[in-house]
Image (cartoon, rainbow, N blue to C red; front, side):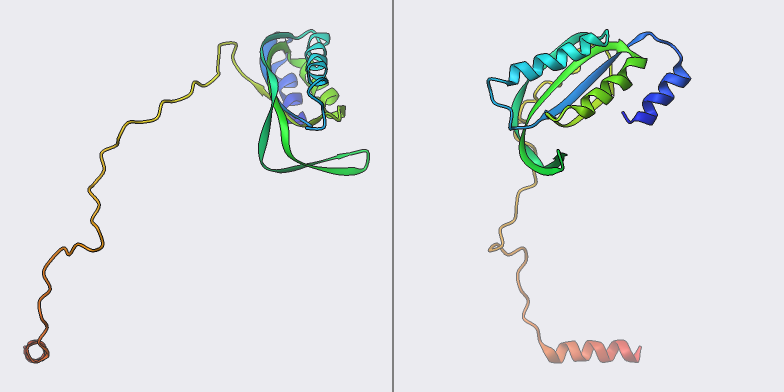
Length: 167
């Protein structure tokens, strides 16, 4: 959610009821495996300090990124091909989400993050099974001939063309 969308939601909604959000994030691969639970715990503490209640979450895992991402930290541009991906689903007052976003923007451990409005139910997609054999047309091999070749006689073709022209 962008800042303007969050502000518009607060202004138009007007209610301070807690809503369910999901935060997906990428952490820098410079974080060591030993410090990963500390950073993960800090994120959960940040959510709870803003009176949010964690519903479900997943410990960050190292993944290869589809494309290289850059982030400027202390006037140095860092390029990342891998990152730790994790997510947290939480309930929080809608007016506190903007404050959470601002605090996450200041944290140099986050490459990117995304806050989405969601539902309380389990939304984790299950893995699909591989499909069985599909019905396919039989393939025609290039070596096989579909029809028999008819020898071409140039004189007969010329006669047919002349007949068509005269008619």
